[in-house]
Image (cartoon, rainbow, N blue to C red; front, side, top):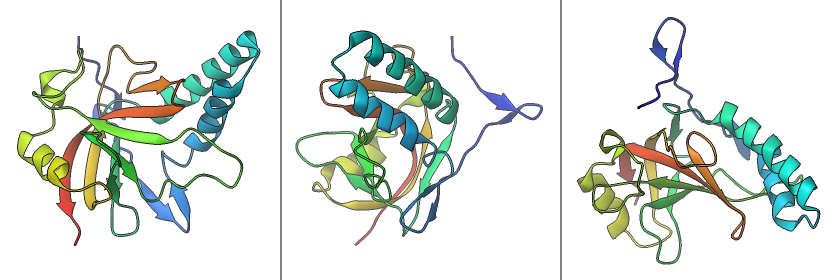
Length: 182
């Protein structure tokens, strides 16, 4: 069953990303502590300590990344086609490693009818045309636009998976708009 998150009498919860100086404000800014904890989990030798840190990080992420949240990039904060051979994955240019320590990197992952994970609802697929514009661009290509976080029932949280072996947080989303920058 599809989960919908509502606030203030049924208005969909919408969170927008805004850029402040060299860092992020809004929903992504609050992720730093959780991402620092996840980085510690990947290096922790005490399994009980690692599990406690992971639970704490997931609690913070659950609050910050609900289904339906909007993340928008503009000229100062753009989506970047991920390097290597990845498809349907992008990074944010305004998501630098923090000066507070090394933290887990964030990958925004969208899904299409042709390339998806089991459990992603058809309503949450990105339009094939938008996906093709993105995937046909070379790695490092920059885009403005916005994504909506989607429910992923098999995730570590409502909209994300954490991969301890690669120390990456994958946030599941649907492209709402996308414009390639020259």
